Length: 413
Image (cartoon, rainbow, N blue to C red; front, side, top):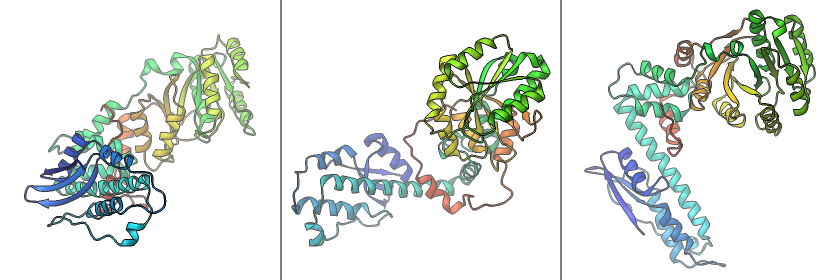
């Protein structure tokens, strides 16, 4: 069946050799300790598929041959713990031989066993890392507890120089180098133009729009600034922006569709800065696509607002669904409400989003600040003062890391 034997000093090295030669989808059949370290027997996934693809079509009861082979393989594959003696297939009950099984179900079971075994072997590997390099394991655990993704955290740990005593400082330096921050020449208030603030419901678009408008009014005057809204859905949305406009002395316009937006922007082309407050909607709402098309048709640049209180999975979803070439960067909001900042910084780094401002409260215009990477990274990696139900403990760490896919794309750091 084209099985291969791999012997290496550690399980981690053996798994690496298997991936290099048989690919990420290789099926682990058995593993045991040997004098040289660990021995793992594996088979390429293609070989398994060929076995099942050539299985004859079955109606009713199967012949005994293939279930016996499958049951023997099942007995071998279930031996997760290292064995001192080779594992022998157990006797197969007659009921199991007679049970009808399709080739697809056999392949499915093998793949499920493959996944479980890979996770358990990876857990063993991470236990080994904790024992050999507790500093690296501790830094990885802190990053995960700070909200950083396992993908980015593990990539940083893999690149951490061996014997690096100041590992936290090195991590901050690398993240700072990869955290893109808008400079003075990129400041939208100074550059001027037309910008739409986009993002899900409740991220703070209307308040942030007013904060940016206030900065522009102080610098260029109220007659050089205009406010637009596309939000005709929420009750009082237009009125809220209109109140801000009245306080600032800035005209506020409501637009309904692409043609209306095009005509309004044409009439406002003499303005230094035009800010568009948009509809609050979930990132999976089909109207997100319609909104992107409207702004693409009128050449409007966009700033994506990221709620720092959201989970990493939610922020990742937001970044993907709102992605466009016209998204020039992001503004992190609600930092005053966030327990940790790792998730929002992680998404900004991996999606190469230029951070323009951070919002730290509801006051207009005070609670809008330039991005200070040192402050953000210090706060993101600061050890939590209290443990919470979501804190990852040492004993839970190997199980979590064993479930992280190694096939995802790496990021240049």
